[in-house]
Length: 258
Ligand SMILES: Nc1ncnc2c1ncn2[C@@H]1O[C@H](COP(=O)(O)OP(=O)(O)OP(=O)(O)O)[C@@H](O)[C@H]1O
Image 1 (cartoon, protein in one colour):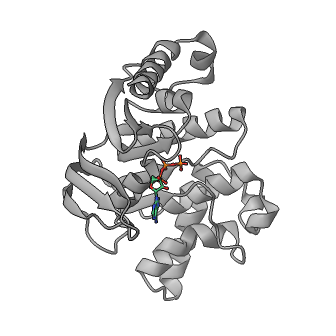
Image 2: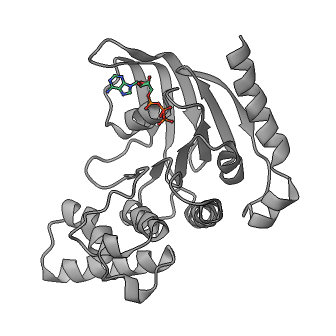
């Protein structure tokens, strides 16, 4: 494991326009510091995914600037992206799905392939799959297991920035909390920069140090969540998250009332 923490990410006067002329962001500024765990919340259509895609380089920026510090080396898997759907290759086993980013970076000869496979097994173990599951195809895995594989695939290159777009939205509440805890553990061990997009305010508060609140392409403000990690299931039951959830909710309600 590398000693460094994640890269910081900053956006200055970002404007994003689609081909049809629609503008999502006009003059957006934000800053995510190195090694932070940050959530972005907001109602459907406010621009969360577009911002995440822009950070990942999947969405063109019309004007303004987006910076990583230190800059991310191209083509080395420095940025991991977890999609809303697990998006696994259906013909590849769990194991080979996880190894895929390494194969793309580093066309494997036989010894390298063995290294990739070892690393993929280690990651599958880290995210909680049993060895019997490694050789299964995605269709033979539950939704939660598929998402675990997807997280392992995003982390196998040891990215300095991990972006997650509503990764748990298709899962039941219990699994959502469990996978949130897994994400927290991984973050505590590695201290990479993590950006979690969600429309679930409790999930945002439970997992992040800062919740950035968006509506209509604007950042309304942020709520700092100064609770210790790990944020366990018991904490959710104790209601300690509630004051933070209320702050975010009020911020969003205020923007709708204006
Ligand atoms: N390729 C595109 N062309 C035109 N408009 C787009 C395109 N992609 C997204 N939009 C519009 O940009 C706005 C923001 O979309 P985005 O998907 O970022 O929102 P979101 O907050 O992630 O929503 P959700 O929570 O439903 O996923 C929406 O109004 C959407 O219709």
